[in-house]
Length: 331
Image (tube, rainbow, N blue to C red; front, side, top):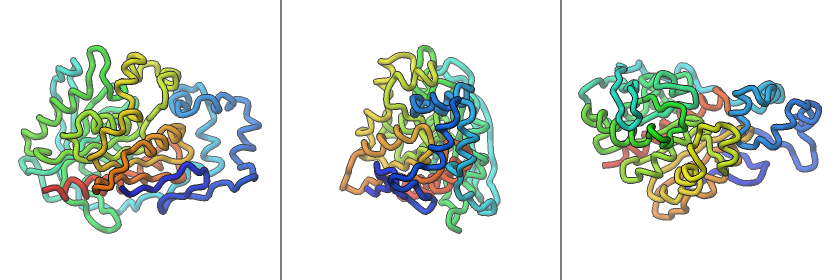
């Protein structure tokens, strides 16, 4: 298991990691925050802060992050793409979700409908749909990426509508069952993911990706989560988004942190910015990942960044490369 993590505030992980404030020296962020009464509630919001900011409960945090450079990350090379392959969209009625859901399949360069390929499922964030599951990329562009100058091995990528219930089961709406029992079989009938399926996601979708891998370890071969929305208690989740979990019992059943042991045989990549409100939960999840000396790898990245598009976009290429490496290495 490869790890790049630490509970120490000054830890630097990976090439994008940035400097942290030294011991005994107040950061510019701390000074600015102390003078902004409107941000006082941020101290108690914890990992729920992002959703509170999105709802206008904590105005100003994004501006503060940008002011002191906390959100600065290196942008990927915008020219690092092969000519994109075809992209096909459609819809189906989901019995599990009791509604029609849309989906889009992106094929890699030189491939198209009818080809047999490994499959990556990309789960959208809160308020999203299958049309915007990725940050700044279409499904076809994502699988046409060149990472460190090398084209990704051929694989298809599918996005799908999961609603706003955080990809966990709610009364009358079970997106997990939709993914495992409807979307994946639909793709397999098209020759995609017949033996090798991976999953990735951003924010709410990152949590959903981890949950899918935990619930279906025999089906999901690898998972990559970018800034996953991981809360450490039901109270935190309910305080930020009352609809994220139907009840405390449902939170306990679908808590990504307490069920991390289910990933003992699944390669995992997880990434979070230091200034992401979900960073404490992601750090706890990284620590809970099984220590498996048998060769199953985990890759954990912590570095400069916030719960914003620049960090998401920067982490998509390494996440896709991680999934490609594990999916295409399987016989």
